[in-house]
Amino acid sequence: MSDPQNNPVPTRLALADGTVFHGQGFGDTSPRVVEGEACFNTSLSGYQEVLSDPSYAGQIVTMTYPLIGNYGVNPDDVESGRPSVRGFVVRELARSASNHRSTQRVEQWLAEHGVLGIAGIDTRALTRRLRSDGAMDAVLCTDGSLSDTELVQRARAAEGLVGKNLVATVSRPEASEWSDDLGGWAPFQGKGEGLAGDGGERKRVVALDCGAKHNILRNLVDSGCEVTVLPYDASPGAIRELKPDGLFVSNGPGDPSAVQPTIGHLQELIGELPIFGICLGHQLLSLAMGAETFKLKFGHRGGNQPVQNLGTGKVEITSQNHGFAVAPDTLDAAGAEQTHINLNDRTVEGFRHRSEPVFAVQYHPEASPGPHDARYLFDCFRVMMDTGQSPGPEAMDAAQRARNRVGSGSAPC
Image 1 (cartoon, rainbow, N blue to C red):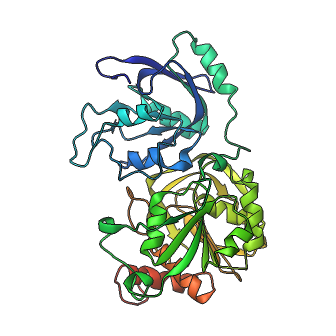
Image 2: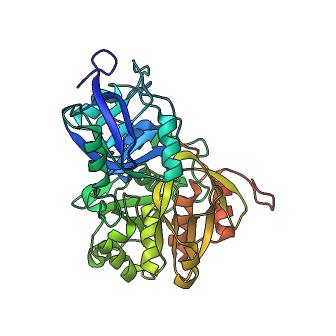
Image 3: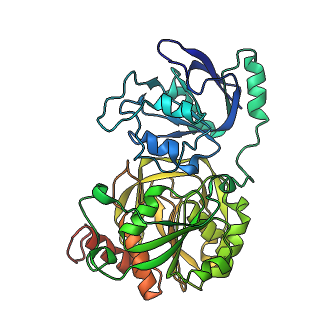
């Protein structure tokens, strides 16, 4: 591991459009070239959650916040067993980790797991380029024998994310039980009144691991579920054997249309049991119903994305991480209706099936660095397992009010 302040390793980030940024390497700076899709995240905090989120597999992530690493890393705030990013880009790497929970510096953690980062570049210029031209293939390089021109050629020849099943690289290989809840980190709103977390009957849930974040699983337990996690390609028969009350489809990386095993299995299971999906799960369920997805220009990644619930009119500030979206004009024919919309670009952020117990959201109601506006959606899943009906505006409003301890009424809260 190198020290980017006292013993810098010259490192370059080359984009497929021909742009090359020069900076200092950190993390695993052994001589090599790392390929990935360059993207950016606008969160002000939560870099450890970003780094360990399996949804970032295959991507070189740029943080727009200028100082990263100031509170170090610790083993409790990870969303998976290791960093999932291909590379990490920051403006300035903090010289010290100042937090009582920190166990090591971010560059030490990345070095242990073989992840290369680059510091000291103009991340504002990089982000503007990615926002104008879109997320693009890129390479990070610590090999001084390669020219800038060769690096740009390597970026242009990269495979990219479209058509690649990255879920297969991050899903757990076998079944496991998950019992951890939010513990002392539960938001002050607590649990919805009358739900399992307040003493009600617990529900048996199977969670398909397409790259599931730990905090999603914690929230499922917190909302009254006993959770068994299965690999992303678990067969309908394997799911049925567990006799679940409901099925959850997790977040994950890459192109949803490439995850054909899961799409085919969901087609068979829709209408058989209640199903809730988040992020990639939202996209996989839409494809299983017959809707379509498309690649966004630069994606949504950050803890400050405004989303409106079309049924209640309420606006939630959400955390997001996705590069694909559901085509809104294909939902109706698939038997679904849009429930949430992104107020920045009007893309689909949620849907419910009209006749079957299926609903999903594109954003992350469990995210730790963002607000907790959307945790009521886990309660909606719990209620859907009781009623057998996907949640409409009244059910969502009731769950949100119960979660926030707000009385009924017509005025939005």
